[in-house]
Amino acid sequence: MPIDSFRVHEAIELTGRIRGGDGPTVRRQAEELIEALDIVQWRKTMGQQLSGGVKRLVGFAMVTVWPGRVVILDEPTNDVDPLRRRLLWDQVRALGERGCAVFLVTHNVMEAERSVDRLAVIAGGRLIAEGTPSSLNAQDGGHLRLQVMLVPGADTPELPGWVRHHTRVGHNLIAGIGRVDGPRGIGWAEALIGQGVAEEYALGATTLEDVYIRLTGHVSADGHQEG
Image (cartoon, rainbow, N blue to C red; front, top):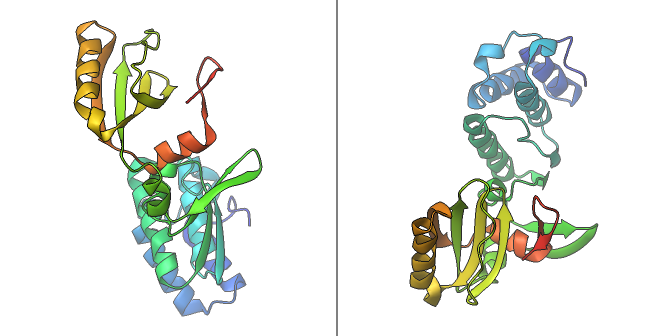
C-alpha cells in the first residue's frame, strides 16, 4: 500500500485493519512498534515527507503490526541508519519468538547472523549451502580472520604461503589463516605497517561473512575474483 498520502500512524493502523486486526489491538501494537523502532518523531508526518530509511521502517511496521503466520522480508534494513537497524533486527527476532515463520532476504550477513535460526546461501541462482549459523561457521573451524587496512592506493601485498584464502574490499584485505598461524599473522601485519603499506590490523574468529565469501567468492574493485 502506498504511504505517501497517509500519516505514519495511519498507514500502520490501516494496514493492520485490512489484515483483519481489531481496532484497539492494532492501534496499541502500532504505537508499540513506533516506539520500538524509534520513529515517534515522525508519527504524524505524511509519507511523502519521509526519508527512504524512515519509509523502510514504516513499511516494516505495516507488515508486522498484524503479521500472518509467514512473514517475508526483502532487504528490510536498506537505507536504515545503524541505530535503528539494531532496533529493527530486535523486532525481526521478536516475530520468530511470537511463532511467525520469517523468510528474510538480505546481503547483510553480519547483521542477519544475530537474528536467524537457519539460513541458505544462494549464488548464481543455485543453493550452495544451508544450515544453522553455527553449523556453517563450524566449517571454518580452526581458521582465524586477519583484517589489514591498507593505505589508500596501495597494491595488495604478496601473501605468505600460510594464508589459506583472501579477499580485498576497498582498502581492506581480509585473509583466512590457521589458528596456529596467529602469531605469524600479527608479525606480518605489523611488518606491513612498518613498511608504510598498512595502517592497522585486527585478528579474530571467522564470521558468517567469511563463510559467505569462501563459498561464493568475491569480485574485487578491479574486477578480478579472489579467494
